[in-house]
Length: 284
Image (cartoon, rainbow, N blue to C red; front, side):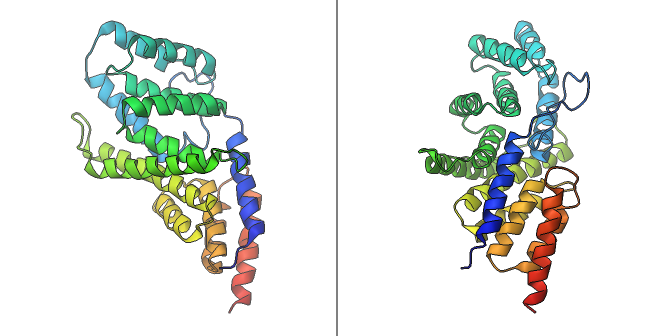
């Protein structure tokens, strides 16, 4: 198989830049919205936040526990240190109670927004150890690991293996998950499709890191299909996968789709689309 290493390394650099891009609060003065970055704008995160809030507002519990959760949940997105402090305090008191799963999920997202990988891994792994079928934590962790991948990390390959197991388990749980009470069919369908999209995106990046371009392309095609605004990173890496499997026209289409979205990657996507289109023309 011919490997187009220039595109491979460019895609890896794009992933690093996307991870390091500073998070920006979703709205000035917003206290409950998630932080707007490549994670929180994904359908899986949005659907999970919606279904979690729906469930928690319909299920009464310990008033003190509920007050502690709401104090944590309502902290402004631009105050991550305060949010983390309240989350840690909550989990120290209510380690495995009804709100704990939601706190682990939100804490993990907060650490990601801070680009604090140590905090992210510790929180997500602890949450998964207590709630091993938490689809959101599984999909989220498997999504972050290949994006924050460092080939110099002696644990890099083990992290990819762990991420793959998380994503596959998330998809397995999703396939068997019953609809919670109080949640509409549409909300449940949005949750399942959103989380499945995150899991397929994670698998796509895992296989890309391993230079398994065919399987990477299959997963990224699944993660971007029928999505109103797919992750440009997924589209860019999909284009690189397709180039490396000799599918130049399809690669040009993926890069062109990526180029539709303003932001960090738009110019690179335009350049790669033109390059792939040129190769597609030459191959005729």
